[in-house]
Length: 372
Image (cartoon, rainbow, N blue to C red; front, side):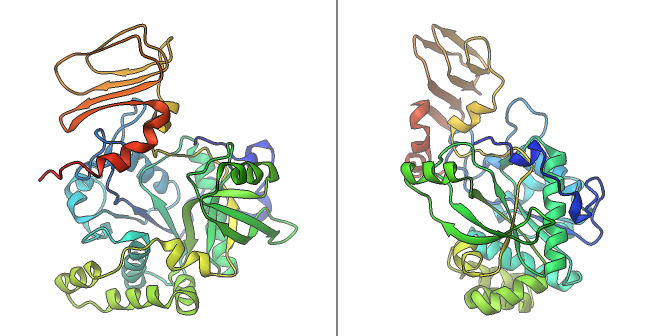
């Protein structure tokens, strides 16, 4: 969902004394760039997932745009791809120093990613520096609002020595996201909240109640905190994750590191840690946001023609409206008399699906034979 936070209606962060244009000295960003790419098949595949794609006619990929946003926050940016994607990441980010790559030997969930990043950063940086964990495949246009929100989160995290989340103001009763319930304001001078509770992906009726209340934000997975803050939280509330962190930090070779990492259970950071921490804080995002989780989402940001169609490649349409038709092959694709559909033709496969069923693409693509 592409949303714009209510901060744009006049809420002011200036009370927190954060310069919205300045790079925060000592701040670190980690971009998690793994993922299997199944939900946008066949545009996105496990060997070339969606974070590497250019969307909406843009000149840079989702990963490159995320990197550009991160550079608005700090000069210290790490990127964490899964091992199969390392060469693609190097090709797309030639300016990224080799020692700023944190390679995930295999996909083992976001908790393992966080543990690995903290283990490396803890060896090479001040353990009190705030670290922002970002995701490479989110679509965001308001770079200034993005930078402002994360600067506030970093400032508050450093001051309070607590993990700070950045939540997304919902604009629809979405059932595909987890929600975060806002608690009390941190103080009367700020618009930073204590976290009251986490809510799993709700039913539609429950999601409508959340939206109506104005007291819930979508959980986008954004978290800010220092190595010191995260390790204290892991010791107290996520001992299994803390054990991962220690094992990786003590690995004496890349081979041992890979063996240890590949032995981890795949689990999300929310389940391993953040949902267990009782003193989390939350900053509502002051930027637009879209998780490109389906072709329906991709259509929402597309550059449409007069008939509401997003057309790319060698395509001929007759009597077609409100559809997405992408062709990457050198043979024409012709569609006649159909509305609200998605047609995608790539070297990896052909997809034809009504737009309102595009959420099913991921589960069906997992049944396809694995290439390579």
